[in-house]
Amino acid sequence: MCIELNIVPSFSTIKQHKDWSGKHCPSKILNDKRWNELVNGIVAEYGRLKGLPIHAAKPSTVTKPTPKPSAPSGNSIVDYLNAKGQDSSLAARKKLAEQYGIKGYTGTAAQNLQLLDKLKSGAKPAVKPATKPSPAYKGNSVVDYLNSLGRDSSLSARKRLAEQYGFKNYTGTAAQNLQLLDKLRSGKKPSKKINTNSLVDYLKITKQPSSFSARKKLAAKHGIKNYKGTANQNKQLLDILNK
Image 1 (cartoon, rainbow, N blue to C red):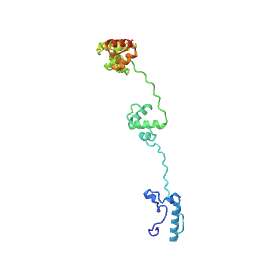
Image 2: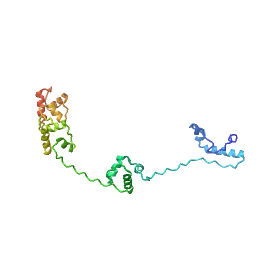
Image 3: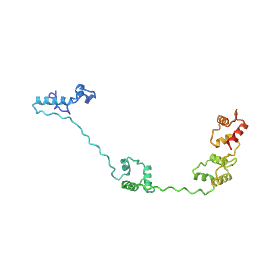
Image 4: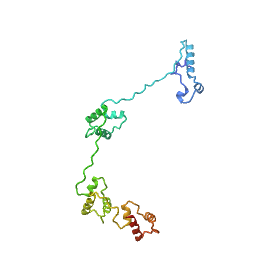
């Protein structure tokens, strides 16, 4: 057939059914691992019929070059970080720049080259000095004072603080705010006893559930039987809780 079709037999011209369809065929020859023997037999017979010297065919193999790991090169800080498997975003580079003492980093070409030189040098980033606590707020605004301490300065938060320090009916007036500010600056801890006659308000201030079912459980826990939420029962429970 090779002679009729003018095909010179070799491993590159004689193909298995498997090469085209994926089917394991010729299965018997493949299972017996005799494919090379078959091709060499065809090559030998072709040579005999054509009067050519007989040489065994060699299976064609394609050797793929082993990829070399890419080494960071060039003057791109982004490419350098990517090659190292590090985050190359502007935010990440800004953090790196701060660690290496580059102030006001915005990602300019000059800053990028400076940072790249620092990284390539192998120098370790400078240890960031411990930040000193900011000086205490000196003004007369309780809101600004609480903000300077990173605390909630909302009206509801100030109302809870006022109640803890014994202020009645806090509404956020200037006088009440100054009074609360003085208490906070004094360093004294608020009284554990909360100045309120309402059991529900007490539970809300202390961040406890104030629903009827929650109060009923508290009442039973503290020995108040048949709790129905009456004024006397609420006062009795409040006196127990708010000691």
